[in-house]
Image (cartoon, rainbow, N blue to C red; front, side, top):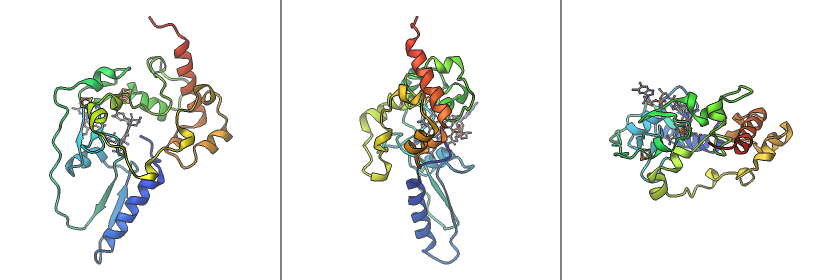
Length: 219
Ligand code: B12
Ligand code: SF4
Ligand code: SF4
C-alpha cells in the first residue's frame, strides 16, 4: 500500500496520542499509519483487532478487511488484549478468484504477481504481460480478493465516519479519460488523496492496459 494515506487517519492517531500524553508526565508516543517500518498486520492481530487472513489482509468482525491499520507506540503501561484467532476455515475463495494467481499459498501474496503492486508501485513504462492482460478494470490497487471474501460480503458494516468516505469526484472514473489524463487534471482531481502515489503516467499506463485487454479476443 502507498505511504501517503489520507490525512484523516493520521489526524485521529495524533488526537489519541495527544490524549495519551496528557495522562501523565513523561508519557511518550509515536504513531504510524502505513508510514513506518512496522508490521501493521502482525500487531493488529496481536492486539485482538482481527486476524491475518489467507488473502494477506487483516479481517475484523465488524468491518471485514475494509480497514486501514495504524498504531501508536508508547511507554505507557497498558493491559494487553488477547490476540485474535483466525477464522478463514476451509474457505479458499480469495485464492481461486485472484486473476494473476498472486496468492501462491494461503496467507502469502507474491507482490510481483499482484495487480495492487503493479498499479500502485511499479513505475516502469509497461506492465508485465500477465498483469496487463488480467487487470479486470483495476487502475489503482486491486480489491478482488477482498470483494469475494464472505466476511466482507456478509458481515462487514459500512463506516459512518465522514472523513473515510471516498471523494465523490474519484468514484468510477472513465478509463478512456484516465488513459489521457494530463498532469494538471491529475493534480486537481487527486488532491491530498492516497491516489497521489500513482503518478499521471502510471494512471495512463494502467488505464490503457485495461482498454487494450478489453479489445483482445479471449481464448
Ligand atoms: C508492502 C505492502 C504491500 C505490497 C506488498 C504486499 C505483499 N504481500 O508482499 C503491495 C503493494 C502488493 C500491497 C498491496 C495491498 N495492500 Co498493502 N501494505 C504493505 C505494507 C507497507 C507492508 C507489508 C509488508 O511487507 N510487511 C512485511 C512482510 C514480511 O509481511 P507480510 O507481507 O504481511 O508477510 C506476512 C505473511 O505473508 C508471512 N509471509 C510473507 N512471506 C512469507 C514467506 C514464507 C515462506 C512464509 C512461510 C511466510 C511468509 O509472514 C509475514 C509476517 O506475518 C503494509 C503496511 C505495514 N507497514 O504493515 C500495507 C498493508 C498490508 N496494505 C494494505 C492494503 C489495504 C493493501 C491493498 C488492499 C491495497 C489495494 N486496495 O490494492 C493491497 C492488498 C494486496 C493483498 N492481497 O495483500 C493494508 C491492509 C489493511 C488490512 N485490513 O489488513 C496495510 C496494513 C496498510 C495499512 N496500514 O492499512 N501492500
Ligand atoms: S489484490 Fe488482486 S492481484 Fe493482488 S492478490 Fe488480491 S486479487 Fe490477486
Ligand atoms: S475469502 Fe475466505 S480464505 Fe480468503 S480471506 Fe476471506 S475467509 Fe479467508
